[in-house]
Amino acid sequence: MALRILVATLFLVFSFARQAQAADFLGDIIRNAIKSPNIARELDKLNAPALGNKQLQMNSKSQNSERPTSPTVNGRSQLAPIEAYPWVVAITNGPSADNAYYCAGVAIAEDWIATTAYCAANFHQRSGSVLVGEADFRKAKSSAVDKVVIHPEWNQLSHTAEIALLRLSPSPNLKLVPLIFGQGRSARERVGAVGQVLGWGYTNLEADPASLYLLKLLPTRILSEEVCSSPSFYSEARFEGQFCAQSLDRLQEACVGFGGSPLVLNNSDGQRYLAGLVGWGEGCPPSSTKPTVYVDVSAYSDWIRNTTGGAK
Image 1 (spheres, rainbow, N blue to C red):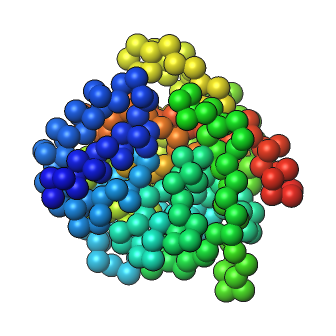
Image 2 (cartoon, helix red, strand yellow; image 1 turned 135 degrees about the vertical axis):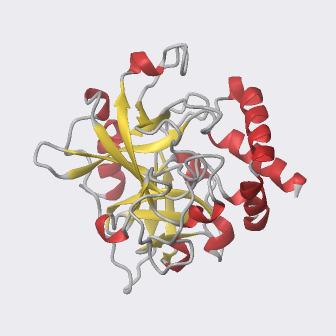
């Protein structure tokens, strides 16, 4: 078990920690894994390396229910009904969602999924699939992927252009409801606005591991670049094509498993639109309260439209 936890730890480091501070982050994660036996046991059970880019979530009293019935998890982030957010999808790298979930994404057309470049680069096209239509992804319908497109300017070190697209294989039994994008102001221009992050995974390293499977909503506030690049957070970092946002609850943050998850805002017409995708960060609550850095989708709207043939 110890070896598997260490492998999971290393995977998390390369998922979202900046290389310059990876060693410090590694130590934090190891210490927290030791302090969190529930997560350690579940990581071992789930084959931990499949978890991927940023987060987890809090205790759930409805672990075994057909659909989440409680509006909150430990009174914090909300469990989200898929009917209200039908465009959010889970990305898996194997035949069983139980041990192969590692990222999320969002439908931006009936056959196209937007996610991060990191998630796409680690996608196994032969065995992987996209899971749709259920808040508990273990019960979701699956679709194969017939094309993976990573932005040609993606830089793994600076995280610039960290966006990618997955095209789903045709399926007569699967119809996605897309989320609009590019029809609202960039999140970088909406400092102080509160959006919603939708995804699976963990929001705290002391979470109940069973909550991994349930779709969650995390209210999140957009931060200025000045605040995000301050010594308290990501000192002197540059955020080209990115923005920072932080959970309203400092004991939760988009973390293990939240990579590629959408952050949505409302435009002037009251419509939800895709503003960002969970990109990277350093550490997870409770040991770290740093914000998450998101891909600014508005910076890549033209590329998305050109690649997909006109997605809106």
